[in-house]
Each structure stands twice: as C-alpha cells, then as structure tokens.
Length: 317
Image (cartoon, rainbow, N blue to C red; front, side, top):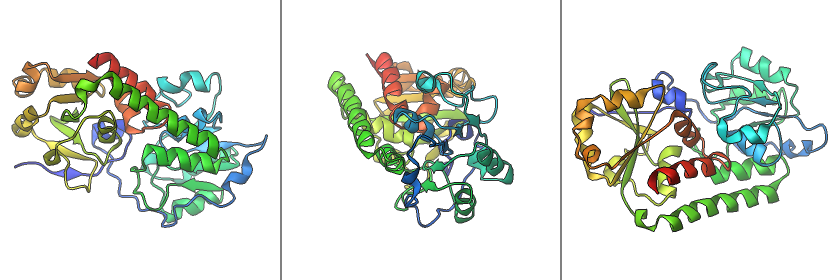
C-alpha cells in the first residue's frame, strides 16, 4: 500500500502545505523555570511564543506583549489571534512574531526581545537547548514538561503549566474544569454519537492527511466521544498518515469523516471523483469545516476548545 507517515507541526497552515517538517529536540529539562512565576506584578510583560499559548494567557486575564501565531504573515489577521480570542484581546496591539515554528532565528529572537518581556511562555513549541538558552537570556522562560514531546502537550497540561508559571494555578484549575465540562455537555447533548467511529483529515497535494490521536485534532474528536479505529491510528510516531487516492476506500468503514479546509482544499476534494464516489460521501456521513476550525483544533486550549465544540454542535445537531 502506497502510504507513509511524516511528522508535522501543530500549525494548521504548515500542515496543509506539508512544507515544514519539524524534528526539533527537547530542551531535556522541560520544567518551568523556578523564578518564572515571580514576575506576576503590575509590570508583568509576558511574551507568548508557543502556538496557542496566547489564548491560554488571555483566558487567565493576561494580555501578552508578544504573540507567535500559527501561520505566516498574511495567513493571520492582526493582532495575531483567531476569531475565538478576538473579544478577549480587545484593542491590544501586541508584537506579532511570525515563523517561530521554523526555529528561533536571530531575527525572531530580536523581535521577542524588542517587546521587552519580563517572562516568556513557550509551552506549545519546539525549543531545543540552544533556543532555550537564547530565550532565557531575554527573560525567564517556561517550556513544555519534559515527559511530553514537542507539539504533543495535552491541552490540560498546557493550561496547568502556563497557569503555574504566571502564578495563577487556581484560575488554571478552573479553566481545566470548565473545558472538561464543555466536552461533557457536548456528549450529553449528542448521546447518539458516543462510541461512533470517526476520522479527521485535511486534503493537500492530491491526497488526504489523516490526523492520528497524537495530534490535537485527533485528540479533539476523541474527547467529543468518537473513536478513531485502531487501523487508522498509525504507529504512534507521527501526527498524521498520508492516504493516496487509491486508499480512500479505507475510510468508508468509519461512521463519520470530518474534513478540514485550508485555502480552498475542500473545494478541490469536492471535485475529486475518487473521493466523491466513496460510500461515506454518498451516504452523507462527511462533514466539512473551515480553515479557522482546523487552525483552532491544531492548538486545543481553553479558548479554542469551546469555540470548536460550538462549530461541531452546529453541524451535527
């Protein structure tokens, strides 16, 4: 079978283009810097350079002075957050730092430094030892816990790590509880969906990238109560599995197929006769979601999760 796996970052735009393959190593000591929480005062200036870390800070009532968005310039509107966080960020104008997923280059580090942060949050990010030292030279830096791989920090761990770093542990615990309740409410409202099998994919370059449970998007549909069949889980080493058109028929066996758009990819797959001839398409078991939904799902946090659940609720009700 002509199928292979590759590792991609969480950022929706990079996944869609399949142009950015990350192999960033961990710092090796991924615990928050001991004095990182010591900056919780009136002069607190937090730079959020992990993807989606800004959303969690905003949910904790902290407006970052710098934000690293998920896409490249032109993909993301100012001020660097998605529609899910527009109300939270209000009229703030943080420094928007692009391309952090490609590494902490000298230019990126200079932009971070120019925001004059007293603290840096880089939890949902690939930070190797060299990058960590460079960030620490700017301000105390919090990265992912060492037991988790780059880009694979569970959303609740992301909340807890960031909340502790900014001395808001109690508020973080409340966010975890509220977010879990949002999932529970969806399950209660859609008892008929619980245990149904599902897959979530994004079309690109004439094929489908199927997200595994190791990716935020795969985790998300599992948290909604769906089950990703074992044969679609991959070997656990990658975020997604490539499906060439000759293998699309394997998707007929799932109860639901969720397709994420990126810059018109959904329009293209709707014109693909191999895809349109699938039983799952003819039976109306395919649901299409916007680019914004795909981006939000790639970085689950206390702001994106409720927003995406509402999108699923609208489609599946």
